Length: 495
Ligand code: HEC
Ligand code: HEC
Ligand code: HEC
Ligand code: HEC
Image (cartoon, rainbow, N blue to C red; front, side):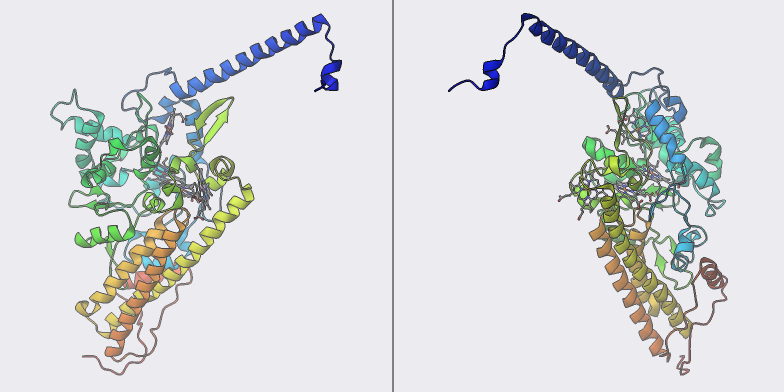
């Protein structure tokens, strides 16, 4: 084969080679410098030279800043309250105003007076003190998910209770201090709670590794014979959130914070747990049903979704990596991922930002529709059962309808109280809502049967609850023992 024209024609002058060689060497040298500087900064991010040692129980996040300014500064951004997405974001949102039916469903518990969209961690302590739901007899337990002073105070209380305080681990002191912490009055603890949720809730200040500081989660694992210290690093990236973003209840006289996970973490597993324990958060003021109030089961619902199945953690979406001057760090501005789609989702999904947003909203719209159907059916069911009581049905006769109401409401609330409008596990959320609607309608049938037995065959006179204020005034009448009559006609068949 003859050489190609270009090779054949190539002719070098001797100095050209040196210039090419020299330029190449210089380029390699500069690139070396550049990468060395990046590696240096990466090392800063990963090994994190400790400039100022952090005390073992340092609850003030500002004291951690000297070493970790990027994490601290992004963490502070949880104070932002402007952003809004279709169903989330930190902007103010009055759930009761948006859905007056919720006032009816929460008749008998403080949520019917005050129930707003949560906002960033920066506000957790403040919002706890400001909520309209506080009472003089609140136990210390109410503080446990609101402040980085909680692990500090628990460990301090625990130090006085363990056999060998000098050598006891942080975990041992923490676990020992939990019970006395819960048993202390909420308001008595307030002067100790000086900081909102902070670094100490999730990190060991010495090694900066992730650490569980909430006894209830450790105990929930223990009761299921699982060891929380054996989980993978990726699981820890969700479990630090599961310290607080879970369903819980206060168990026994000393209000011991407990996760109802003994039988598992589906809504049915928890319902079984609550039924066995005969637990109710309140007696419904309209229907008299024993109701379980579900609190943000974000972790539990997430577990049933495609992302958990694929080992995508809470932190992957809510604490995406960011890069600043070559330094990679976890964004501690915990917020709706729809406010950071590029970092949160687009790293895995090569769809456009608009496409991703539309996809999420279309999932959420469907869940919202299912929720509204359940809310409507449930509200009417509470009135039907109340009407049966007004007609003369006694507790024994009403027991089945009330049990159906309890089952319906725990399911509806499991989806409604979970954040993200069902996005974390859409199919599971829809499955649960379907059951909620079915059980509510069964309760209505049962109440209708009782009403007919007492001679009332006309439809129940449902009072209006079109606005928050109207619904609240209505609930007030039931709590005051002066309810409107729900009965129409009747044949005087009262026993
Ligand atoms: C695949 C990504 C992804 C994962 C994994 C994920 N989330 Fe979310 N999360 C979302 C999206 C999307 C929303 C909806 C945000 C909105 O409507 O603005 C959301 C909403 C939330 C919200 C409410 C935020 C707001 O502003 O309304 C909280 C709280 C939350 N998630 C906590 C968690 C927790 C805790 C976990 C882990 C147990 C988790 N998320 C796992 C994507 C994710
Ligand atoms: C120590 C308890 C605690 C831990 C741990 C915790 N959260 Fe929260 N989180 C809260 C509380 C309480 C609020 C509500 C604050 C408020 O409204 O004042 C909240 C609010 C949020 C919000 C914003 C508002 C909303 O709509 O709910 C997001 C997003 C969020 N958390 C995500 C997470 C993620 C992700 C993790 C884990 C990396 C996590 N949180 C760990 C207690 C905690
Ligand atoms: C709600 C839990 C939570 C809180 C509160 C929290 N972090 Fe983190 N932090 C995480 C998670 C999750 C990671 C990712 C860790 C991993 O994958 O190893 C992380 C990672 C880090 C890292 C390792 C480098 C990086 O950015 O990935 C540092 C340093 C850090 N956090 C500092 C802080 C500081 C300082 C504070 C307080 C201002 C704080 N964190 C508050 C959950 C938290
Ligand atoms: C770490 C990677 C990762 C991140 C980050 C991530 N996802 Fe995913 N996502 C997946 C995987 C894996 C699947 C499952 C795909 C499969 O198995 O077919 C999935 C599935 C989905 C689906 C399809 C669900 C269904 O059942 O149809 C949607 C929608 C989705 N993700 C949206 C999001 C959004 C929105 C975000 C950001 C808030 C996000 N994802 C963040 C990896 C990720």
